[in-house]
Image (tube, rainbow, N blue to C red; front, side, top):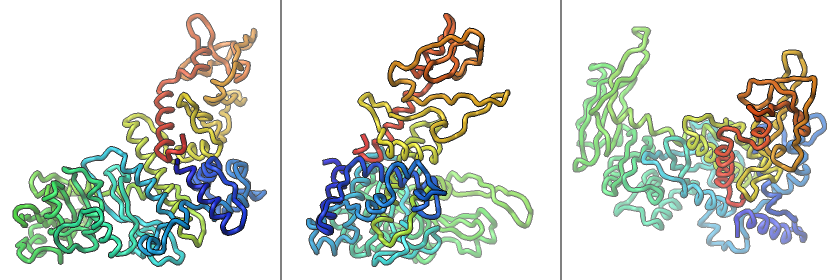
Length: 504
């Protein structure tokens, strides 16, 4: 059974048990509900009810679903049959209410092709209500919420994640995955071992000082993994004889020192920039230094500073999780709620959308790609209208212009408005397009790239197109022979497939 069919089944079943009548929802309505949340994350208002109120009514969302139905569905949405979850399972897994959603998203994330350089860091699902596993992480944009450890690529693609439920639960999970070494591990080391089944041998991991320890890097070296991270001063081995901070400061900015420990498996590096930074790595050291620019207050100019190889490689690969959090924060699906399940599922939908856009952006390469705002709004449009894809794999209702998104038609030099170009669906559906010749009116051809004038107008689109023996713009325009249009449609279809398998 597809996951989209599983959601209304659990939702209707729970409603029947509590109220005596089924909610009557379906997979199509769930897709519309998801699309409305995406639209609300882009077109933000102070309150959700304002999308239906008279003065602030937004037809894009208000026409898709009635207000009361939207709130009822948001409150009653279920992903699991409560009767099948025992008391023991509920005590072991505190996020069991959203576990099927998490596993469905993780399954898709694990199918993504892996990069060789990966980063591990913590992320926060914003939530300020009451919950026994809620965490407070100072320094985060949203310090209160559910802590989630994330494995991501250097470009921000999420490959795996784990919601933190306590030290004992995390170490128990590591034991179940057979990833624990033959020694006691700390909480921070357990996070890294949790993601080892999702990491291919020979990969390079990067993480900050919260996770790093020389013992951890030695264990990972034996598993054919390369790892680099910053290190706390109190985590330095006692036998490490690195230069002191005073010595490095006297040598000046850019001074460094390195030693190899743990049977020549781990290189410890100290580098002085504004302060002394300690690094540990089983892959990089000082050699092959490069030069970076730093601002000097004393000289009031930028100066060149020597930088060890381990520092430059760490700076290039460390920010994958932060990049993903940045993309999610642009258009977050926010709503005031006391239910942590609502907050969690909205955040995971945003994670999936951000992953889809980053994957789409990487596929485009150097070609022009759709901004994240347009991407999410286009996805919301497809979901709310139910126009996903036809049997030929082409997206229905998609458009190659901005007219369908509400932009006004551009004006000509004479002050008259141009007729908006029709969307793809209108240009390919039915035998509506017939050429009409206007005898006394020549106008510029509307086909992209054509500079000629024509007196042939489309009977349906009301736009002028060349239709001569040398320029047959009418034929090309109607059949959508636009450069890269097939590639764009393929990418959009792939994005929707990546969001949920049920969107096909």
